[in-house]
View (cartoon, one colour):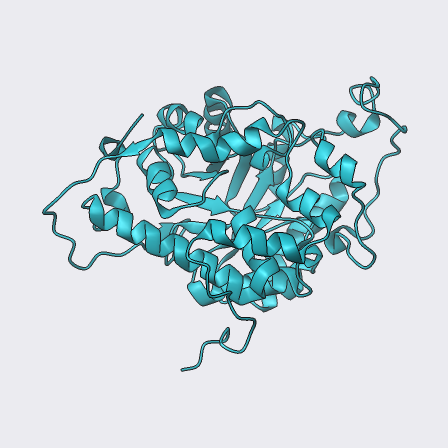
Length: 368
């Protein structure tokens, strides 16, 4: 049978690893789009640390294990995925490719893995859902307009989304100097289409260094733990919170009845000089004690990175920039190829550490 991706854009022949996509993507993106997609907050320490920290962890190989009937299948919340690698929520994907999120969801369907759709997607959540053949999750910012938030949840449920991922680590944007230097503004014709009609509280004009944010109406409406209880009253979907970097917050989330936790520092785009996500994962896993699934994003560039994350307590990982670079380079086929490369590398790492299934991956396989 012909693949639905077979007639789409072609992969450059000299791409052998996920990192090889970056220079091709850079050539195809404007300065402003590159600043938005590739940049981080302030001096971008956390952005780079997310990747660098994986290199400080070492894998210990195992030999002569039974690897027959091995696989990378994962079940979460009653949903089955072919591998533990999800497409992370990324806004405004039409900035890097005309088909944007519709190409990304086609790729997710082709490789049978999950995708988390951004509230700030440049395609409607309904149009994205109509293109999928795999479970989709909807990433939700709790908006100052709570009634609009309620309507977003209703739309996601009606479209068939199977979990809500509530981003909790960005009550305000990070200080993104790279975007400021590039003069970033959204291009004409690209917008957060799912937020049309939302009421936004008035916000005084400010400059970096002004003290208006803490007293402004935007932060006065910032979500709290009470809002998670309110969300629970609105839906029966599993609720995950994304942006947890502290064990005490993880313990509180479990106590509040949250169904899953994503260890994330927003890809280094909010608060700079935070630690890498891989470096806080083990302490969060210890606090959670397996009571809810843990996922991780930030810095995944190799299948060995995925193995390390799973060994330290994650059940799955999310990737963001790598698949965006694949999207910019070759559309849906580029995204699918990025996911294929990561899965193939994960399978090789599992075989070389004697892991037949994901359940065999444990902390004894890694050291610092």
